[in-house]
Image (tube, rainbow, N blue to C red; front, top):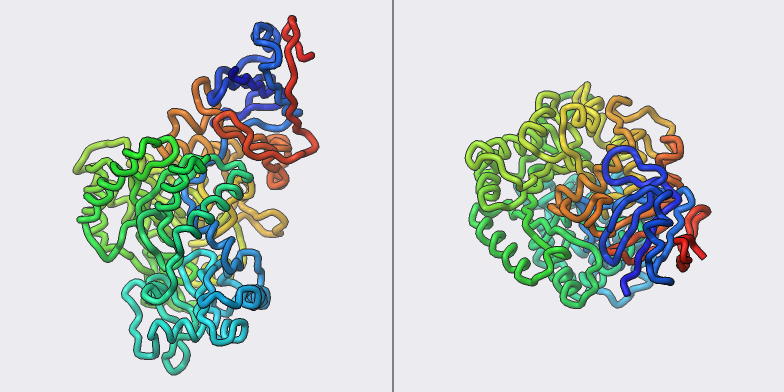
Length: 573
């Protein structure tokens, strides 16, 4: 007998607009059956067999579509939780203490691997090898920064990789050096790849365990689907997660739906398109596209602003405020980028581009414009992620090209890494251009949202709080970029639900509360719509439902779930 579940007693956010009041949502099996006024419940449910109805009393909490993260590295995040995890450290001393504790607890591990350190904890954003040498004497240590654009290495790791004063910087990276030229311990961007031949591979078993750990963590945050922003490639600090997803699919442990973005190797060329199309077809033949598909390509257009590799239209400044010759890095020649994106678009692949600096954003939009000119309009739903700085004249082009703005809203606030390592080195006036969400909305851009976890917290509600206020909870600061870049709450919620479902090509059955859609739902207590904007972060995920099944629940002051029978008049007995 199929169970009928009835959510009532709280507002309903359907995926767009303001929440509905006085409405009940009926779920039959895995799908939403209907939405109807609560006053009509008794008449509708009176004919249900006794004991077949479960009433979920929201008691004022909000029912919403499940969150979807449009840019995340879930398996990498899960693996880091199982390794030397520095994500909870807030100073150099704490980071070193965590490494020491891990080394002492794992004396038989040859290499100490992990990540999560924050650049603002170290002078110039560059931690030194000597700190690791003291914490784990004689052992090779390799730790990714929180943003995964830098690696921190011990002397033993540097020596095992055969690196020294005569090792040149790669074209796409920087080795931070001591006075004699020897590597100081920090390796930015492509310089991290110099350890590729010696660092231990992440085993497939560890990747699988990392996926399961990540899935547990993310479901608890109300996330029911995501786009993994790097599959099919091996980066400096993130192993290919695709085998883990395929194993979970075959073993029936993949509970969420995943869109995988195949990694574009920037030192290779257009021959990658045919391989990616073949991989898309191979995964489709596994027969579970509602759980896993890989019809997306991820291209890194530039780096990040805090290590001055984000591609900028204007030069970075030095510590004295003088212009340098550094405009950041375009990882792919713009002409080649236009060629690659046009070919991917013609092959029906979605393109997901990391574009952080204003020059990178322009180069990405130029590539989409070239694809549109060659192929005509398509429904490939290309998107640009991060968008830290967007030139004013480029903002309208998102709507013109149907390019989705993929927001990492948690970053749109003053914090040490931005205030100490980025803003002082940018040209005057660019603080006002940081993460211009409001401008994008006013110019008609479609929004999606993601976290980039483990770069930052995966919690959608924390990101939504900052999207609405432009100030992190508890921070006494002005809104970053001023108040006109704020989003209203309904728009921010839509970006994390229906907007990301659109990007993931899952808007036909997820991202909305509509009849026939999957019952992927989240209960938020208190409703973020019922608290002041600066208290949105107080809202918590009380329940997560996937395909009509309760997969996460915590007790809160408001919510409860109880199974009752229905009497002959259709009332709970």
